Length: 88
Image (cartoon, rainbow, N blue to C red; front, side):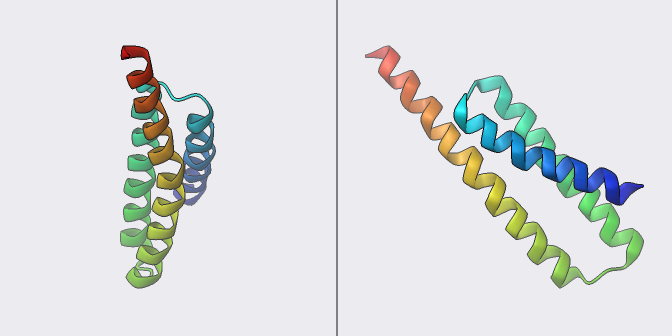
C-alpha cells in the first residue's frame, strides 16, 4: 500500500510543479515543497522496509528531484520577476 501512496504522491508532485510554472503563487510553493518532502519520506521508508538497493533508489530519487526542480525553480524565477515588475 505504501508503494501506491509513494507513486501517487510522486506523480502528483510532478504534475503540480508543472502547473505551478503556469500560475505561480507563493502559497502554492509550500504545497509543492510538501509533496516533494512526502515523496522523499515515503521513498526512504520503502528503502528501509524492502531493503532495496540504496544506489538504485538514490539514483531514481535524484532523477525525480531534477524533474520536480525543473518545474519549481523556473516558477520561482517567474514569480520573483513578476513581483519586481509590479514594484517598478
